[in-house]
Image 1 (spheres, one colour):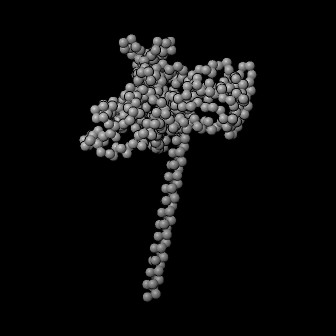
Image 2 (cartoon, helix red, strand yellow; image 1 turned 30 degrees about the vertical axis):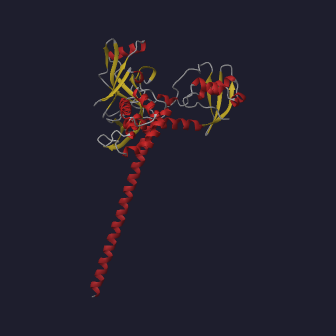
Image 3 (cartoon, rainbow, N blue to C red; image 1 turned 135 degrees about the vertical axis):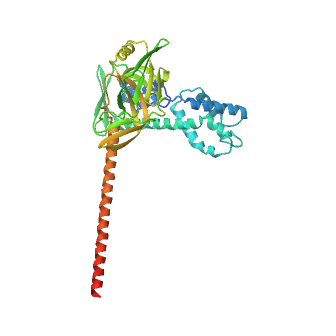
Length: 419
């Protein structure tokens, strides 16, 4: 029996009402069982909600300029484009559906850039097409949307893989304290226990396992705790460029300058040991990220809580002196230097958090890194095999040439002798 799933932009309350009143669900399951099953389906794409959908300042500037042009020249774009420009100008968080529509618009209308009057200095600038392009955020908007589409695809593909693993619910057992749901899987049957004593109505609990997430820790000696205008702020570096890591299990690693391009506006938290309640967050301005020649710098405004005050004390006296960041990788490269495998992280695809840490986590290579290393080693083996085959082929060819030369010399000798 197909279980209802939450629709895009459907609130939790609306979905639960629809799921609980579904005729087939009512026929198949009791009230408690339906509540457990429907709650499990709520916001299965919650990882999408962590994607920062706030337009950049460059997009806001482009949209504002396009609105002024449209007012001045009376051309360009539609009412939909005008509404989009207003959202961009005000830097309103966009829905996933809107981002997909923006990508569709840019992809269809990129050809307009070839038209007359699109570029400054052309006759008729700004053309209707140029104004319309700006209403949707312009080139900076297109670049931003392409990055967001890639992030969305990663999360949606992960969700699809998880859904495809679950074939069906085989049976449900209900006790006084819990409901046990048995799912049929491709390889084996496993059980999921839903504790009815826990509050299954709580929103947005992060229970997804991000299998490709990696954690890296750096010794940063100059973590500061400042007090500006009565606000305590922790300042440090979550990552340091061109700094060799500890051995990660067969390789060492560097973070390249530029690895965090496009990531500073992610929804990032400041945590302790990558766990617990966030002490600061980029989306509300209490956590600010920047990049300089040294690395990824953070400034985290501390709340007036016991946890934050304890952390600041430990930072001031040097008991805690390490920073760390959690991330996934979009692009890396490998090389062997003096017999040592060296990985360089060229591009981070998602930045989850920066943390003050009590123990280093640099020995956690992560499954993605290990797969990447394995693939690179296979490529190196194939390259060596190809080189050896080419060397053997050249040797065989050389031997054939030598043999031909000897045969020709022997023939010449016989001819001379017969004369």
